[in-house]
Image (cartoon, rainbow, N blue to C red; front, side, top):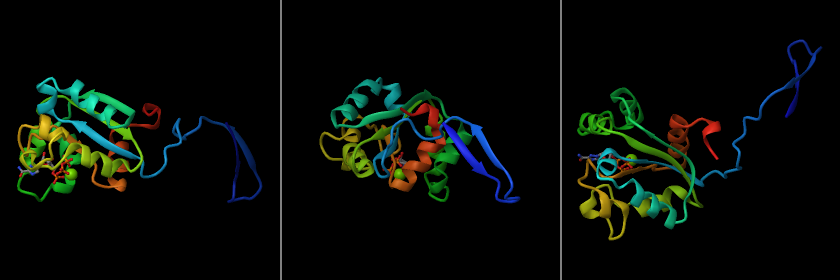
Length: 167
Ligand code: RTP
Ligand code: MG
């Protein structure tokens, strides 16, 4: 892609520069993505496959995905919004206790649709058939994370993935 860039400071120069496109490969509309993690308890229990199957069956497209282990520092930063909550220390140590799968998912109304698919934070209160009802062990070890707003979905997706890791 060729960009014509004008130097407004001097108003004298037109600089034509060859550069790579910084746009995502697919034109994903705002509100159509959410971010998820398959948490350490679900990975440990060999439930990556069944959870991904539920995600696919519910009509989500996988935009980005990686398998990784979070350091306590990274988990702490990701959940910084909960810093003042009594379970923050437990949450950070749990989320850095084993590998996770991080992914960006696409579907119309993705945030709300995915929260419906995963169910309530506390698996004992989650609806039948939801991912947390099926796979979560407890309120802390609750199988998956799902973004709670479009704004946070973008922040979280950007925290884990660059543009060249999205398809
Ligand atoms: P998430 O962010 O992981 O998708 O979960 P959520 O929105 O349903 O719940 P949130 O209030 O954001 O809490 C984040 C995570 O903290 C852990 N938690 N532990 N011990 C407790 O009382 C407690 N409460 C929350 C859970 O892992 C929860 O998913
Ligand atoms: Mg949350």
